[in-house]
Amino acid sequence: MTGASTELPGKGGLTRRRILDAAAAEIARHGPAGASLGAIAAAADLQTGSIYFHFASKQRLVEAVLEEGISASLRRLDEAMALPRGDTPADRLRAGVHAHLRALAELSDYAVVVLAPQFAARQPPGFRALRREYLRRWTELIADAQADGTLASGPEPGEVRDLLLGALNAAGLAGQDPARTADAVFALLRLPPC
View 1: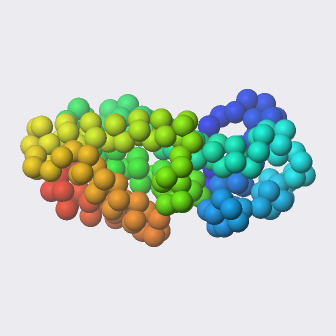
View 2: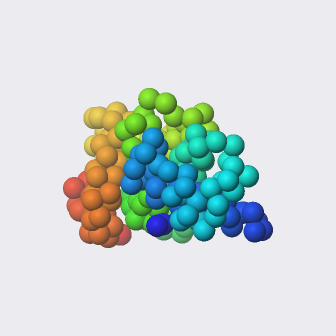
């Protein structure tokens, strides 16, 4: 089980983290309908009723897993953009690709839940806002790379973003090596060497 890295204060925060990590693993394996609160509690080393101290309902727990998965990915993207890798759009795009692949690898259970098709139609508002922000930042990365000639300027930035993230998600969820996937993407995009 791979956990998201939000630091939650105190014992209650650690318990909440265990519940979220256990829920992400259970939902990734069985989907939201098939996920068992008993199995989540057992994996978190708790009694089933203890979950309700932290989450009002199973639905709220599923929503919290979705929100944590996307916010952890957003944090990784923010961290990558803050690193001194250079200031060119190509450098920023490379950093974004590495951050996305790292999130898929490190947050594998959360990634499976966040990317699950059954959530496409009914996303909780908190998740929807975070997802919009994540996609906005990627659109900006693509648009900047197109504006300076790093990427072809013909397709709309949102279309390029969706194609790129789709390829990264497919490779990441298939367990492909993140470094090799990044190298392949950079070659495909004809990004100049670092």
